[in-house]
Length: 221
Image 1 (cartoon, rainbow, N blue to C red):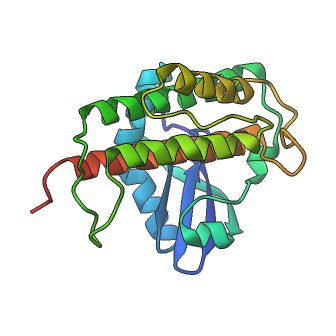
Image 2 (image 1 turned 180 degrees about the vertical axis):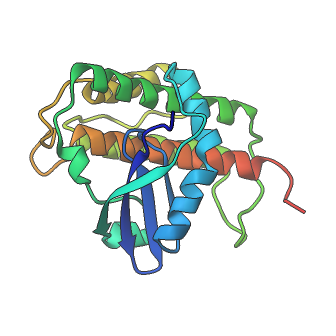
């Protein structure tokens, strides 16, 4: 029996597009246009499957995509981050759905920590000769999460690298918001809905986890 297609939202800006699997927070990839973003999304299925496995959430062995929404991107899209809240991310979130979302977010942090533990302090430079090394990347992710947390009504001080207790407290506070049922409205005025917050936060964690994996080894031949 064929599986139901995975619903995808695509946001398109000049020279950049993001494809996001709406039921799988953080499974988002970019490309030059909508088609290349969808291709990149498919290419990263196996890597995202590790997150689902860590969360104990069944991930499809076979899948297809259905683009249910395509929206114009903004300046943040063009800069390189998914920006636009999809219509599906404004729908109510049941207790079961919220628990699943929080589990996937927590699993993404676990995957990130595993990658950090296995990566050397100095990473191979990127294609343009740049890119943060491991500890600077970890610091960047922690800082971004403290900033993102404000969009869901939390005021958190960025933890120091190595302060396991503070890092865990930050993640637990964010997961508590993502794991709460919602009517689909922004968590705070002019803030983010919990579904969009999960997508943006988990995308950022995984994007850097996967970058770190790619740059931890020797340059491709």
